[in-house]
Image 1 (cartoon, rainbow, N blue to C red):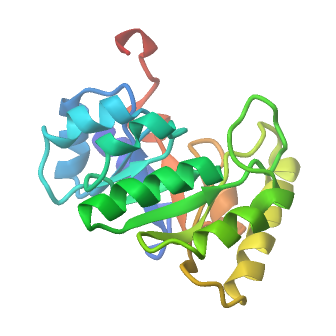
Image 2: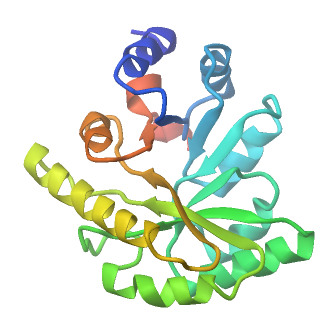
Length: 221
């Protein structure tokens, strides 16, 4: 199946109120344009260098999502280019985003990435450290937290639901608190193999790559 038919298949499973982010990492601009011509406007990239390169090669109404780990020294390259940063995971990174966006007179919309499965090989903050990061977010003038993101551990449907529900509980708890610069608008969770479960547990952004574009070719990186 090609991109167009894959997209049709995915869209049939996603409610209108859920945003589909087409994860285009390692994919050529031709594939992105095919998805764009089918109406996709939200694209996700893992690496800053790849996002910046593609940014200049496609229509300016695309909303770029930085979904991979964001290194502090790469923030300067994405200012003004990214609709949503999904991977705020430290106070150090927060302060760099605040500095760079303030210097340009712009606002950064971000999601806090939580390492909900406490996996050593994954980025994201631990649940118990969330309050410290939120306290620092309150002090910002150029960073707006718009929700949460997670990459859950690989598992079966039961474990998937467990982690998705934990994320939704945190999301709902924060939604009822009045914290400056914090708005629980987006809950980004679920990928190609589990996005339907994620949606059923409350996700309103899903990140689908292989389900749209097919297997990735990492040799092109």
